[in-house]
Image (cartoon, rainbow, N blue to C red; front, top):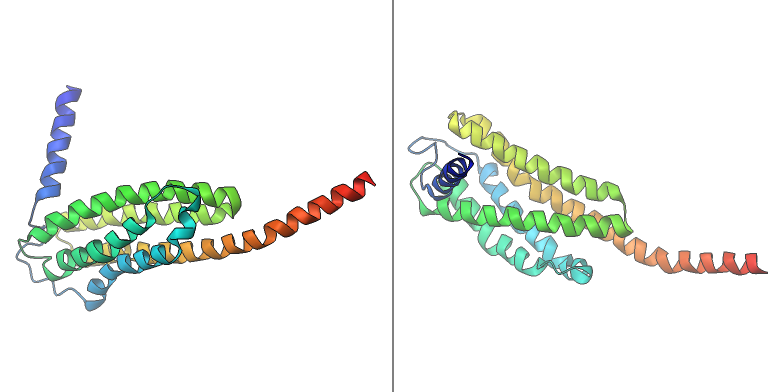
Length: 205
């Protein structure tokens, strides 16, 4: 029974992944311009990753640059086309966007693990906690936007999907804050080491 349940779940997932029509197919949505603009927050996040990715990747093997280029050159344009330009139309953009977004979410899970490890090791645990909370909130927003689509609630969909698109922008700010903390940590580390050595020398004297 469990096997058939898994097959059914997998088939449902494939059906969702490969459908080229959204629930709003054929509807006059008149989506606001700022909703379309929010799709480019992935590109902003990608640019931030490119600017500090080489420093972030010193202590782990996460492909920051590859991930960043995918967000800038693929995810943002796809999201803009699928969620804004062709939202109410039968389009292959919906399929490609969904496949790419699923891959990006999996990549983001891996990035979260590496980010948490580095933040907890040398910086504030609050930054790591904020990063995880923003990611989980983003998943929650996406689920709420999917429910709004099924219920044909245009305004609720716009709100929740807009917030889903805003999460990469917040994640960019968290990354920049963490980068500043890392720089301060590297500056303070030699000083704290010297102070420790001086104290030890005085104790020995």
